[in-house]
Length: 87
Image 1 (cartoon, rainbow, N blue to C red):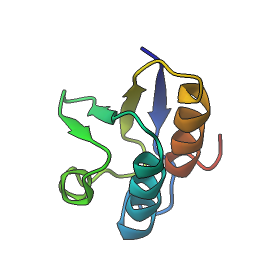
Image 2: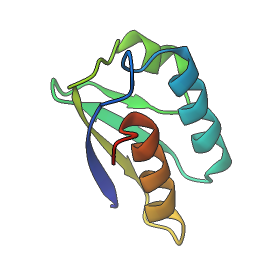
Image 3: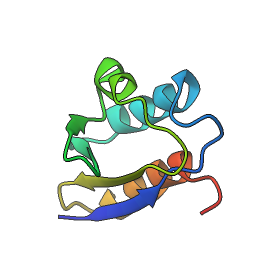
Image 4: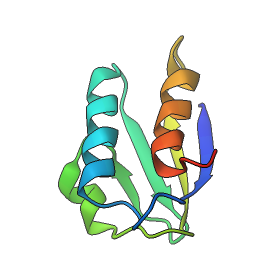
């Protein structure tokens, strides 16, 4: 399964604007994408509320994962870029 390890550098962490962008990108992808925190919490990135409840901040490490597909790497790279614009 393709995955990306990301340390969040987005200004102010993961707030409403990046969450909306993440959800939009995931909804356009035909496979589920999950986010796992360093504490082991796993959420489906298509859920705005689940993602907001994590209260992710700059410096938090997460893992993005999706099913293997032709566009999996591109989707994960784009999602990682939202969380870590300095990438």
